[in-house]
Length: 336
Length: 199
Image (cartoon, rainbow over all chains, first blue to last red):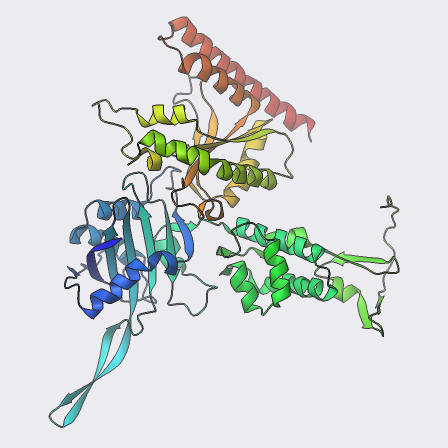
């Protein structure tokens, strides 16, 4: 994949403004400069660095109309400074004062069969410039410092062979956020008018299914308890974005429990990012049942189990459960 | 460089069967708790049908698809056939929660005086875990949700009217419209009956 063009624009906050400020831009040339090399690295590594699989949303009329995709396609078809400015305008229209000033790069390249466009935004920071001059130094406060870290940026990459019907799917990343749990709504939903290809319902279903199977299939009681504890901890992660693999690391789940969950996970989905819906997760895991080797079986909702059953650890791995309440129902069932 | 037909044959034989199976299994799991589903079918577009579509031309004689492997979105087509009109929306909602759509349309005849094709159509992005392992996979698939009567009419209409080698006569067109009206009417009556009898 050969990098062919880089355009850059200074994009201010313009959300809600009737008169949008004019966006100044330039084409970057000089492919030996450090700046160019840094952007070339971002371009070449974009498919692996951008780990969120996203797709453009349909139009409000239900049809295949997406304004951001259209202007990106215009740029792919003719990578001019003016076409790039349309992408910058779209970003400015959704940028609030909180996100503030940013430097937008649009990087384009292609090979024999594919065209690739990378869109990347670096937020403005402040800094201090110390300059040595004839035995003394001058100190200056600078407000428009970009790339305080060349690793802190938002990016999206689109690659396809067809610049007419293609370019629906892409990948994105937000490296300005300290953890993976909150991908920016501003970048994916508002600017790119996109959403995750792995919907929250799908990702949550995969996680829920695997937890259920893993808890059931684990031979060790400790592993079953560890995975059950994960279900309860996930309540605090409702609405957060993560992959199963990153979640288990974050929760410091043991290697053995991780392995069992991974073995029971939907094929090729363990590293997919999705937004957790705790209600969807907990519904199929609503009941917790414990069987003892004396034939007893205790069952309660997962949320209530530890409240309604008091557990006392005894010698030789034995436990005693006790509970109090009024008898509401009694059932006889078929034997095994 | 392989031609479009050879490229599609390679995709048809090596990639599509696995994606079709993944989507089919997935839809069956999503709809596991739904009653009144007559069938779910997921199929790859046949090589001949793909090639015929790839060669379609615009009025000016130019090819309609300049990059058919990327532009033809129904290389995988899925259908969910349900019993009654009341079933269509809950099924659509559940499927839409699990798949990212780039298109969702209710296809109905243009005029209220006409009877013809009715159905709910989606174009979805194929989930990344079904395709990311392939070098050049399709990225979209089409899904239709229809009632039994909508499905029955559209199949017969496709077979008799759409594929007809000569133009239909006025009477034949009326007969096609009549069967569409009958199907529409049957759906309306079953909708009422289901509403009355299931309460």
